[in-house]
Length: 142
Image (cartoon, rainbow, N blue to C red; front, side, top):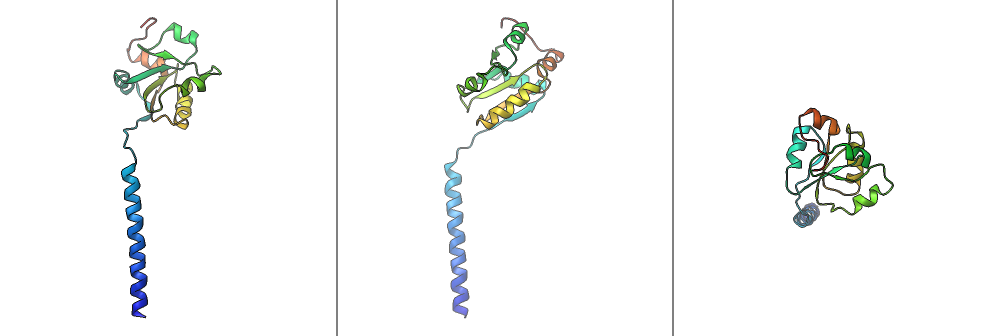
């Protein structure tokens, strides 16, 4: 009986060790990325928009965009039927800062982008209205 208990214990230990080795192998195979994603306040959004590798996306309509937008922002209209197609052309590992007028559409777009596999996306809580109230630049041709 003692022999069976020891044999059983050795089998369990061997299996446990096997699982540990497999988990460590797959852990070492995965990439480690710094991921940021979510809704952030104006000051943090401002910091991110000043990063050289961040793309600022205004998801309002072209008419809203023409009235004023954040410096360097491109326009991808959330309400346009080709919105998803336009997003699919972007690098999913890129850094994106999105906004709309008050934050409703950009919050929805953030979820869509996360579901599409975008890793680094933030949206401006309160939208361009919060941005302007914070004293930041809103421009027509910049």
